[in-house]
Length: 184
Image (cartoon, rainbow, N blue to C red; front, side, top):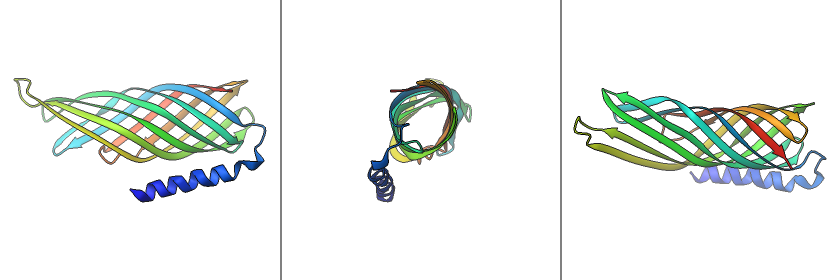
């Protein structure tokens, strides 16, 4: 676990020390996206999976035209499913931080990002026909990755991206979203 923090701290340190020659395409930005999230959770033989509406909000700072840092809140929604005939639901949300590498191609910008997420997951299940409930909570910090593209329209940009979160308490956690970004 400490290796993740040392790696992420080293990346942020290198980015901060290399920002002395800032290019013209720098500054703060903020945005929001909505899309389809996919969750898969297991607890013993009990397994829930499915997709739901997910959304996120984020702020960032463009250090150089090729490099930015970004942080935000993400909500993956709630998946309702049955496992072995037992209905259940799982809900996940969290806070994330990324280092973003950009490749500007005129008005099109392609990017890849890597970072971390601190998330909370809640699993609920009806144990029997009397509606006796089982509830389990998990929270952790894990690695996160993403790929995407945006099209600039002046100070606004339309952004589409896919993010995968390597959540140790979940078997799969991802979000495909489309949204708007405003460059200050």
